[in-house]
Length: 332
Image 1 (spheres, rainbow, N blue to C red):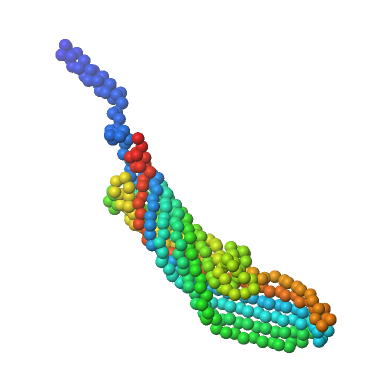
Image 2 (cartoon, rainbow, N blue to C red):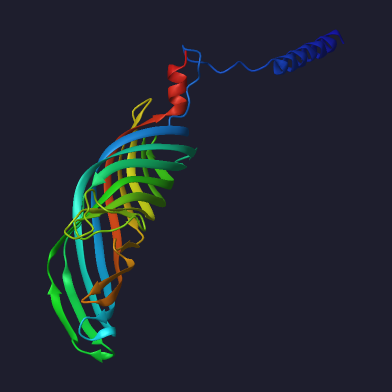
């Protein structure tokens, strides 16, 4: 009997001890010497900077149409009631394309989520560059028509077409780009990520030419020192284009920072850039010739439509700083 009671008491003490041990909080995880626990090098926010090469391709289709209509009331020989009308029209069309290489600087911010061997995230890129592109030799048709009507009688009809082969220099400058991308990647090793991304980009362009004069219409402005009386001047059109974007790359963790090599492609949606002639409009003047009052009214207009399409290929190498790792490493 005493032995039985002793065994029961022993079991009770063991059970009580086990319950007490279960009530004791688990030990806190070990921290680093600086007092901060290490974090996942891939998860969370990051910033990056890169330099790279960019190759740009562009096509330009140009269609220019102009009309000059001048009506004169009064003639020294036919009298004050004579009406003379001179009409001249001109059309010019041509196509051209060009390619150019350049260097760009890219700054990015983003956020990653890691799930086992997979990574998904979002990233925004901002890049600066200044590519010059598209030196176009116009190959097309230049058509001129003209007629003179005096008191409803056609006096001087005429029309002719010529091949337009003059060199018109177009420089398409890509100044900046902002891209929004969704990324997905796979860890081939714990420190090596291969990834791809899809998104959309918008870029700012300048289209510069040395042909004719333009007004501040549709994003275009006349060049410095432009003379409305004639001659050549440089005109600049500033506009934006946007398009589908995809990326592919590989990224390596070096402990506290990551290095990456990335390929990026942007295919811009085509855009029509419209330029209006500086002298477009109606003008009128009145005078006296040999005692006959004469009134001259002139209507003229020029419209230059340039259909621009472009694409770019980029190869960038850069460094990524995970903000969580940086915070733990550099916080005092």
